Image (cartoon, rainbow, N blue to C red):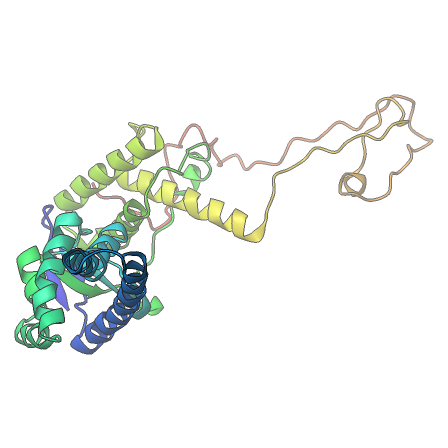
Length: 320
């Protein structure tokens, strides 16, 4: 287990990848890269057979650099540290502070990897990984990166506390399509660990995440709502939407009155649900309609727009 400290003085527990899993991931990446290099080389040789020897040598060097060096750099940059081999073995390259890598990190790792992996058949990389406390090779040391295990057992996942009941459905109109997965992950990790953090640090992180989430959704954090409760309510709304999409729960459609129905007649629940139409009863006058009854709402249940003064205890305690 490796403990990293972020800029907010929060310790992150990361699992550095072991040498066998890293070696297998690199081997898989090399096999794919070599196959692609052979295919590209054959195509280049067949298309440049009429050129002189110097031009063919220059093209072969350019092909080597583009496929075996530039290819892995581009893949790690676009996938944020997840190449094909790392994806197969559940690994990811991250920065020393736990954030996603960028082009400069992938460039340094790829350039040094030519020497310690390709030219020495991985001997230098293996020795450096065995000597390093966190299993880092020279490319990771100079780039400031770390290869970690991304797959975590399901039983170790933290429990996200639900929001208070009076917040259910309050953020149903938010547009959550612009929120990236990395921000959702950060919010979930904070909600699962906010009870373990210092109160001041927890409050600062909640306000920062709430502000970033509000900026992505185009809404503003309510003034009378704690930042942690806002995060829990928005996460609960996202989970509710995913559940509706997964189980195919649609909206409510009002019943359509069939033609020829007497004036003032309202179908029963069975007719509204698609059952057979029931004729009006003869003991009721023409034009009679049953008045809908108001739903029974407990007097202690407040409306959603106005939170009650005495909120029920749900186990969710946002930081002070």
